[in-house]
Length: 329
Image (cartoon, rainbow, N blue to C red):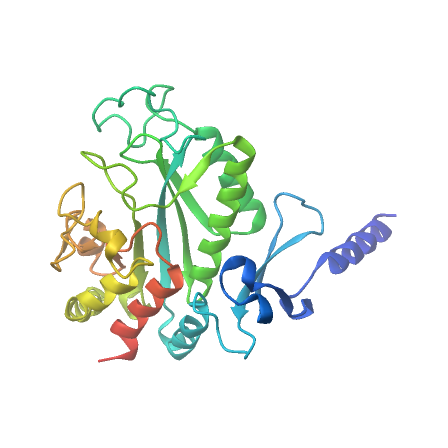
């Protein structure tokens, strides 16, 4: 009987396994998304990654796709295709990424969730990693998102309340190569779906509130195999030198508007560096690149690029980092 049950379990498991190669190329109406004309509207969806569906569950899956135009060329918004090529070229250095995704919860009026309607909460200070109904707003949304990501198979590594009230962060990684962009996009999708169930809105705006409030970023932690090995601090320092020489190029890639969104955030205040300058330092959250104190002490590890905006495309971010530090001298 035990053996029969084992066989039945394995049969069910095999039947539930769906590979990305099992998914056909689909299409959709690109004219409804302002990506095509109505007279030539079909856009192609090429499946590239598959995850368990935390909403329908069971055998249901979430399928991530690349978008291609009628002439089989990548859509303008398809940043994955070129990123995948770069990651394939850099495969031998085993690039790892971990992205800290900050975001802000809004109510139905597009005002920060939990903020008083006729004023502002108290100054920043008690909200970061806070606890209590007067310190944090929306924890039920955050916890539901975390559980949904775990179910889906996302490498979600943590979450915390951020410096501005109603602002939160979750971390995904470490992921190798193209997997970083894939997993972060799915995690964002899951967050929007969860927030929908709670009747709140997620914004990835890098500076959702003007004034003396922190903005939102997507701090990107990065390392190669050489950096993670003893003496890797030399490789980290070399990478930082290369990043400094390409500062303008990176700023352009770090938000969808080529730096215009990030300009509101990277002011040199509120734990940011100025968008105009490149800097690096140990344990310095006001620098472009932070070397964690533990990394400096161990002499190996990773670096943190603090410049990417919260609304960045992770494919563009990880691609330009690889191109600058590995593929170009």
